[in-house]
Amino acid sequence: MYKLTGKLQYEPHRQDFKKSFKARPLIVQFPYDDLSAYYRWFIERKYGLKLQAPMFGCHVTIVRGDEPGWKAKNWKKYEGHKLTVEVSPLVYKQRIFWALPIKCQRAHEIRHELGLWNFHNLHLTIGREFPEDENRYWSPRQREFLKEQAFNEAGEFEEYCTPEGV
Image (cartoon, rainbow, N blue to C red):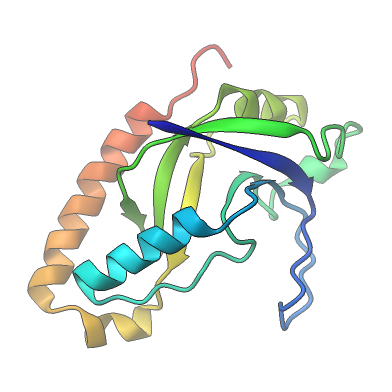
């Protein structure tokens, strides 16, 4: 486990996004994209799979854009505040996303303040793969192996990331 510190950012803006982005997420934005870029490089070298970078660079999502946290009276209460998260170096895959599990009790407390349940598994997204490209890069044997690995790691992640007392 290692620690990263970033700033809370409500409704982040992405300048190069082609479609209008109406969702209202809350993220922890980290100053550099080096960590997720390194893991994307590693995945490309090991599995031959080129991942798309996350929409907001290296970040952790606390409130997804489709959640109603923005309706709370204290929305934007912590804009710009620093938040430190603990990051596990163990990569896992969930559907088409590759990520690193994180621990951050304060993030769960912020969700609770906004009236949201803590079912959200906190993670640092490394990148997104495209299903149509999957057959080009992976043999059937590689796909089967990775599905087994992702299931095992996701199961460990569920247990690892359960917040206590919230």
